[in-house]
Each structure stands twice: as structure tokens, then as C-alpha cells.
Length: 406
Ligand code: NZQ
Ligand code: ZN
Image (cartoon, rainbow, N blue to C red; front, side, top):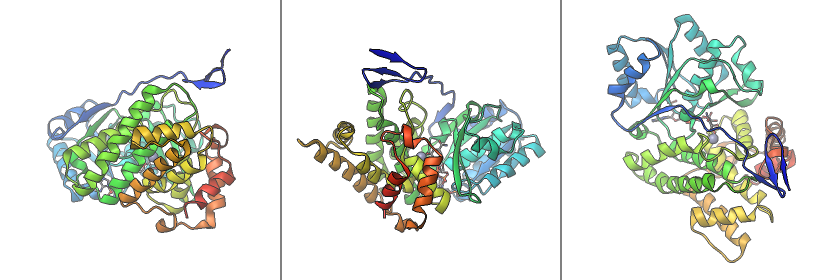
């Protein structure tokens, strides 16, 4: 019997694809040496006054800042700057950006950096038009449906996929909240993906970014929806590419091919390609965002610590088949016993993160059990993992996963 509902279709109890729309209008300019000939041309389509947004100074050290300023000055742009965007960008910085845009009547935002810089830029872009304070629409849970200033990005770190999606994650350390928000107008118009801009990414951030990319793939791959061969096979391929190229980038930071593969993986892992049509919410991100909200840790590191523990925790009779596929298609591991194969795949995931130099326990990143209960409550309150995850997780489950990460 086929039963239709407005969100999903059940076929004999199995969940088949949700209907989806795949519309990702970001114009990707991939490859080296494109900025000199294309950047100002792109910006001019939106106007002359540009807000350049960047982080704590890595772009000043590696020469990208000088290159961009030089191009804009020669093009007679009016340049406004928002600097010092924090990793885990703060709402206060967003507000500063909105003020700058209003005071200077900015036409276009140029985000030069990693996910934090791009996320901050997106919410500034929306905040410019919004009558309410940006934190209001972030906590509002309905996303942002209004207009936003156009955003152009120059990505410098392969990780979040923010360069090709409509989401942003902003932190409010005063209330220990780190929340996501998204809206169609927040999608970057153009993103420059030059792998050479990531040559200077330190080993720790290279590994963390790779863990984040893998997590974006895992979160959708381990899902209750059936028959998603396209999403899953594409996902397995990107996972294998990250597993192959991250160690090369760690060993040889200026290996163009390795950096190029990681960069393109970053964008494809979270632009809808491997996620659309899949039902339900993500688990590890909900748990990790609380770690960052309370302890301000690196997102990808938190994910690497939690992911193998979560995998082990949700492995059961219903989920084992998926873990067997994962072990075989991603790690090349097979075993006659399903659970043995599944556990070997999970162990391989743990070993990979560890070999990349990621600290693999919570105490190593300064987190002890003191706030486990509070963070577990928040993880459940801020998401629908209790009802809608691959394996639903209660507060007690989340706490147990935190505890197993000690
Ligand atoms: O701030 P600067 O000085 O630029 O240094 C940064 C920062 O310290 C440095 N870095 C970046 N590019 C570099 C570089 N250092 C040397 N050379 C370069 N080329 O790396 C550090 C981390 O940067 P950040 O932007 O914070 O990293 P990432 O790209 O991992 O972004 C993390 C943020 O994105 C959110 C995370 O929660 C976190 O707040 N996420 C955003 C998502 C989205 N928009 O779709 C999804 C993700 O799941 C994630 O939640
Ligand atoms: Zn992530």
C-alpha cells in the first residue's frame, strides 16, 4: 500500500525520497589565477561600494589581502572593511557589519576567508534589509525569507560548504547559543575557489576542515530514506577523495591537486547534492554545536571526536546494513559477520581522524563532564534529534555519547 503525506511517501513502511528542489545558483569560479582578471568585473555587476569581510589576519599574512585591495583600488571601488571575524562568528560582529553596510550604503559584500567569515557575511547581508535585530531571525526557527545584499566569496579553507549554500551559523557566547539560519537570498552569488589560497591553512585546520566535510557527508548518508543510490554513491566517492587527499595536504601543504580536491569536496558535500530528498535531521552537528557554544572549540574537531562514538552508539540490528555498506564502499573492509564489518568501518573512521592529528577525546580540547547534562538538554532543545534523526536521540543518549568521548 502506498500512503502519501505532504512531506514523505511511505511504501510498505520504508521511507522513499522526499520531493526536493535542487537550485544552487552560486556561480563557481574554480582554479588559480582568476582573481586578477575576474574579481572586479564580478563586483562591478553589483556596484562600487564593497564591504570586505575577513577574519583574524591570515589573509594579511599570506598576501591575499594585499592582492584584493590592490585590485579594488585600481578599479576605483569604495572599500569598507569588517575585520576580526572570529572562528565561531559572534552576533556582535554581525551587528557591527550591519552598521557598516548601512552607514556606507554598501552595494556588495566580499567575504575573504573560511566558513566563519562567509557565515558572518551572510547574516550581515540579511541584517542590512531586516527590520529586526539579526539575532531575532536566527532564533526565530523559520529561517530568513527576506532580501539580502549580494555576497561574493573568496574561499580560503576547505570545510563548511558555506561558499555554495544558503546557511550560516552564528554564536552568542552571552547565552551559550550557537544557532544556524538560512535563506535563499543568503546564497553567495559568486564564489572564487582557488586551491592555492588554502596552501597556508595550518595542519590542524586542514584536518578539522576535512573532518567537517566528511561529517556533512556522513550526516546525510546515515539516514532512514531508502533508494537514494545517487546521493549515497556520490557521497561515498567524495568521502574517498577526502580520505585520500587530506593526508597528502597535511604532508605537502602546497600540493595543488590535494588542495583542489578538498576544496571541491567542501562545496559538494553541503550544497544539497548528497542530501536532497533525504528525510530527517543531523545528529553529530546538533551535539557538536553545543560543545562550540559552551567551550568555543573548532567545529571540525568536535565532530571528529563525536562521530565514531555516535556511530558506535547507533549501531544496531536496524542500522547495521548501512554501516556494512559504509565499511565496504568507503574503507574497503569486509567481514562475514555484519557487526564485525560495521565496527571495523567505525574503527577505521576513528583511526583516520587520529592519524590526521586530531585530538580524539573531549578532555584534550578542554571539555570535562561538568556541562554534559546541560549541553545534552540544549542539543535536544535546539533540534529535532529526539524524533527525527537516523536513530532518535534523547537527552540521556546525547549525554552517553558525550561521556563515551571522555
Ligand atoms: O581568522 P583567520 O585569521 O582568517 O584564520 C582562520 C581561522 O583561525 C584560519 N584560516 C582560514 N583560512 C586560512 C586560515 N589560516 C591560514 N591560511 C588560510 N588560507 O582557520 C581558522 C578557522 O577558520 P574558520 O572560518 O572558523 O573555519 P571553518 O571554515 O571551518 O568555519 C567554521 C565555522 O563554520 C560553521 C561552523 O560551525 C563554524 O562556526 N559551519 C558553517 C556551515 C555552513 N555555513 O554551511 C556548516 C558547517 O557545518 C558549520 O557548522
Ligand atoms: Zn559542519
